[in-house]
Amino acid sequence: MRGRPQDQPSRAGGVARTELAHELRTPLTVVQGEAQLGASLHEGADRARFERIAAASQEMSAAMTLLLDVARGRVGTDARADVVAAVGSVLDRQRRADLDVQVRSVPSSVAVPQELVERILTPILDNAFRYASARVEVAVESDASEVRVSIANDGPPVGVPVDDLFDPRVRGADSPGAGLGLALARRLARTAGGDIALTSTEHPVFVVTMPSTAPSTKPPG
Image 1 (cartoon, rainbow, N blue to C red):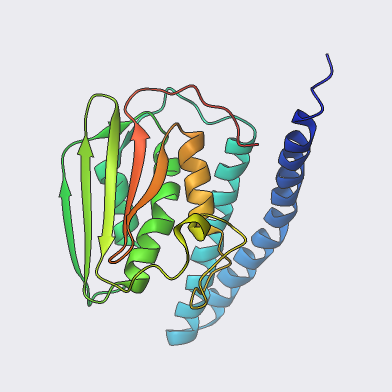
Image 2: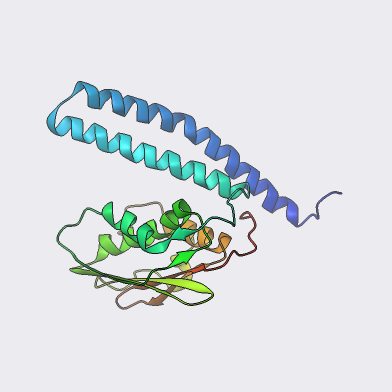
């Protein structure tokens, strides 16, 4: 049976994203290989720079594999993740030692694969560490239906309208990225049956929700 006409643009977009991801994986592999070679041929600060490039390209390749799995609907609903461990893993990759980081948590697990939880949390925590003046607060709470991760920082107010915050075409003037991080994080959270919301704009507070029980998921359109 042929799909409905209104379904076709969404499906075409999914195919295009999958093909683009495949195209990106080859140059990423080249970058990773060249960086590893450079690290083996240099010492000191130069070697450290090559090692950072290799690590970043490896992380991006892993993210690409995850996104392909999500696009193809291969994210299993029987997987479970330790949210507190996922928060700790993302925090370990942050590099601002000058910040006071406070974490309040209760043992919490969600019906979402661990790597997907980390991919959802990473852009939110990256933003918190980037814009915080002195403090970042993370709180993990749960009930019978969902787990909530609140991420707050004492930095400046959000610089774009809330309606634009998760739009991949819009980014703040001082943002170093391409504006995709928050949009992608929310897309992945919704694919997993959760969501991301901004609950305070003065001192930004993001709340990530994820289901405690397996949702009925579908690939993003």
